[in-house]
Structures are given as structure tokens and as C-alpha cells.
Image (cartoon, rainbow, N blue to C red):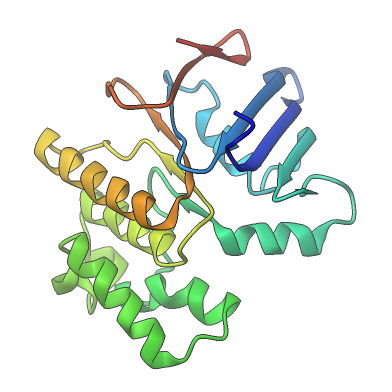
Length: 224
């Protein structure tokens, strides 16, 4: 893969809590345009793994190198913050701020992490909302959304930052096959435009076009 650009490199990742090891000695490379699928089971640590790639898990050790910077290294708060500007995480559930409406939730990373003007932010949000067919949800509060709508809004918030890496935690939960297929089509369209690397966890979804497919076994990622 010498001709491909490495975006995210995971080396010797270990996630251990008192009395339990979730992951040990995990290695994974994420290149531009990769579509990596990880098949997960119940309570196997997949969500914790995804959060660790943003430096959000205190018990993670090893190296997580994003664009050349190790975001796990002690004292690298600035590097972690920079990674969070360009790594989009689509939560399995929740993830929205209750005191903000849907539009404000999607706008939050752009308002906080960029110098975009309000007009530019609005244009980005309206485009993503139209593509994901959630324009009619923008004025609603998070507690007015069902589980499927919440997941799609989380996806919109991750796509609107124009990520370098997109992490999707079990997108399909509660969705019909038709909606999941449509969402994946939209994600692929954005990936073709932005060339981001992608990791998606799934319980039982088969992604025939995935560049790599893993399952979680014996505290590690095993290629299928």
C-alpha cells in the first residue's frame, strides 16, 4: 500500500479496566478511502474501542497515531483536540446535547472548531441534512427524535466537519434495511468526495465492498 496515504495507525493498543481486559496488542492501519468493517457481539468492547481512537478512554495504552501525531501520549492534549476536529464519531445511541435543537447540535463542531462564517455553516448543514433526508428535523429538540433519527443526526454531525476519518458505531440499530442501504450510499458518496478513511462496527451487516473486514475475538481484531 505504498501508494496510499496512511491517516490513522493503531499500534499495541491495550484497553484494560480493573479485573477485565477488553483489547490487547491491537494493530490497525487506516488509509484514505478505506471502508473497514468490524463485526461485533454484545458487550465485547466495540464502543470503547471506537471512543479510544479519539483519546476518550483513560484506560487506553499504546499508540494511536493520527496524521503523524500520537494522540495517546501524555501531555498531547493539543494533538487530541486537533484529532477531534477531523475524526467524526457517530455514536451508537445518544450523543446529542439536550439543550440544543438538531440544527445547533450539527453546527456545534463547526462553531467550536472552525472559523467558518454562519452562512458557510448553514450551507454545510443544509446540504448534509438534504442528503440524509432530515431537513424537516432541524428545528426539533433531541427528545423529539426516535432512535433512528438520533443516529442519522449523529451521522450528519460527523459528516459536516468533512472528516479525515469517520467512525460509525452500529449505524443499523433499529433501522430498516432500506434506510441502512440509503445511509451507506450517502456515506460512500461523501467518501468519494472527501477521501476519508472509515471504520464501521456492525452486529450482523454484510458489507461486500469493504476493503477490510474484522471480527472481535480473544481481545483483538481478527481479519475475516
